[in-house]
Amino acid sequence: MTCVLLTKTIPQSDYLSIKTYSNSSCLPKQSTFCYAMAASQSATAQESHTKQVQEIAADRNHLPERYIRKQDEEYGSLTTAGLSSPMTDDIPVIDISLLTSSPSELHNLKSAISSSGCFQAINHGIESSFLEKVREISKLFFGLSIEEKKKCFREDNDLEGYGNDMVLSDNQTLDWTDRLYLTVLPKHKQKLQFWPQNPTHFREVLDEYSSIVESINKLVQKALARSLNLEENCFLDQYGTTSTMNARFNYYPPCQWPEKVLGVKPHADGSAITVLLQDKEVEGLQILKNGQWVGVPIVRDALTINIGDQLEIMSNGIFKSPVHRVLVNSKNERMTVAMFCMPQTEKDIGPVDGLVTDETPRLYKNVTFTTEFFFENYQQGRRALDACKI
Ligand SMILES: O=C(O)CCC(=O)C(=O)O
Ligand SMILES: [Fe+2]
Image (cartoon, rainbow, N blue to C red):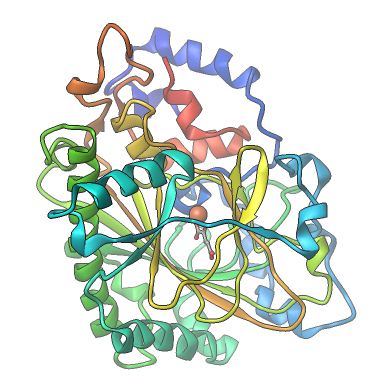
């Protein structure tokens, strides 16, 4: 977190203590916490010359050094051992249509979030055929020629658009993925120059999907508040008048050396919640649970929802933002769409009043959780969340 950004909510003296804190971070140097939202001010000029992963994957004889994962970036007791046959976990399946009427489903939600920070949402009200449309716009876009896709190319100093890992330092390990990253809400913040014109229905489908995901976001956050016996709007009240939502279309080409790379390095999301539309057939997502990497299975028509750092802060640490990563494989491409839902970035967030008591003292400061905040922490190889701890 930069001093500049935090001065709004945290005095200079606290900034110094944050600095000190960073030295005790247990995170490896190159870890990629929250880079999903990282700002791009320091992206180096060489970025525009970087080949896309899709192009690199086409050369099946050569794996550039920059993509080879480093041992010191690992977490948990299962590291490479977990790669060939990842354990899968029973990530709880929650019928979110019951959350307003069934106390037992509300209880299931609370225990899912407390154990994994993640659940599979079913009966969310989105037709299977519409989920197919969302997958289809992604497939059509990533299927275009590189030249066509580069019409949406992100600029060196922007996070939005099509491209691969933002290059932040010369020895950074790169993720085996190409992405299209777009702000979808609030609508006036959309940067349409990065939105694909091809396929022609891309914008219509993404706008519709975003507004449905926004309803799901509200429903889940209200339910989470009720599960703690709090007023149902207590998390959403921190959103201000509108939400922010970013979409990230992830494309993981097959890789000849799947054990040497990661689709996405270990990270936690900086959102309040993330709603992930997984590939229909190809698995790859793992979460770190009790020190072990466990696979998140595909559940037909479910949306995989995980807690992000901002809800961990608002819940004063009761809900945990899980560390997760993505594996790739040598045979099949994989595509996912992550929707990061969060309060307005201009607004301060902090633990809700009802959760700070004598027995459960405040764990996090009030912070303005901006993209720059993520970036500063990312650069120093630590979790943004840690910098918010008291
Ligand atoms: O593709 C996936 O399964 C997860 C992607 C992810 O963690 C992210 O985009 O933040
Ligand atoms: Fe993520």
